[in-house]
Image (cartoon, rainbow, N blue to C red; front, top):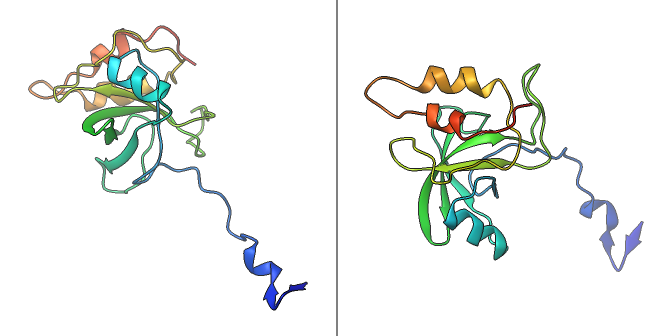
Length: 144
């Protein structure tokens, strides 16, 4: 169909939607940290500005750097929209829990259920002299 010299099919997207977490992806803060609550209430959710892995695509359990309210904070991905490995649930939104530099969560409670597989992922990433991610598992109340 032609409309004033333009072809309508030019405006139809033929690529599939990719729900993966890359740079500039909007995330949803699911803990009760002050900065996270304020950003979500204002309607300005954090943006992912760096993913700490070699693939460039974030998966559950990966550490990310987010820009939230003009500050840079680190976070752990606890839920993703994209298709996951078997036995890992798929979520409706891309969820993140904010942490500080040594792996301690900024909030005291996580509001949404997180996948059970994150226990094994976080235990692999916790090492003796580095970040301690077991505190993140301790504040979680529900697992899927």
